[in-house]
Length: 295
Ligand SMILES: C[S@@+](CC[C@H](N)C(=O)[O-])C[C@H]1O[C@@H](n2cnc3c(N)ncnc32)[C@H](O)[C@@H]1O
Image (cartoon, rainbow, N blue to C red; front, top):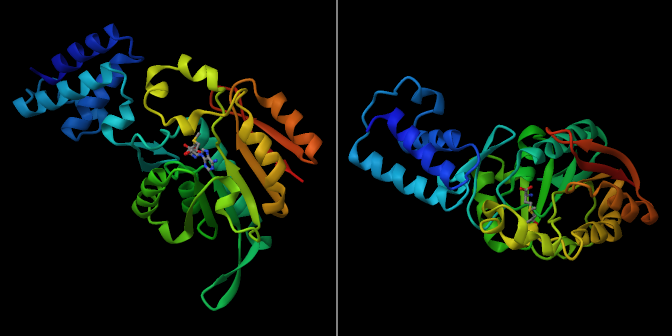
């Protein structure tokens, strides 16, 4: 079979299984097998696949038809232009979270001159500091460290398995020395005397009862601990509103992602606890997606 025939057959099969954007998915899987950029497939439509290439493609297309996420099959995804490995222990980083990370590194870079003084070797050096709460694959922490090299980031997750991958991702992106990883339940993983210029988080925010209604790629393959925000999806915001202030440096910011329609509920949680909601920002689809707050 030729490249074009494989794409057409795979796309037809994926469409029948109700996979979104079946042609694109077929092309991305085949490009992965052939180790080619997707656009190069278009220059190779007449190329005949070897038996091994055909078997490997069939296997991946079959798994995709069973709704395994594309990123699990290719092993990685792109986040803020960085390659981030993923597996079943971490949430697949979403494009909408890139804008949260971007707001984070812009704040850290601007804050550089007035940031926290931390010991760097024998000298006290002023560096902006950030806490990434619920780091998962490490995508936000890594983006902050790459885009704001002066920053020092603490990345916390309750999942030890997620942290193994987050560390590998930090090494792969050459920022492991800028990020300290800590395993534990929220702020319990952070020493009580730490203060950060930025506390940034994409916490679990799906209401428990809604998880069963999500698309199979999310429901069956993202870890439950990455999705479940409690009965109304807002448990982590209540906890952050109550506890984050103690870990925030004067002049610092909290930046949190949230789900569709949660903005007003979040404000109702934050404002009575002395938080000033400075901005609510939209994602690429013009949906309100994250907010910036200060004390
Ligand atoms: C929605 S995922 C976000 C992952 C990553 N930051 C991203 O944006 O792709 C939430 C993460 O919070 C972690 N988490 C859940 N409960 C936690 C807790 N009590 N303390 C620390 N991390 C927690 C989960 O393991 C998961 O990795």
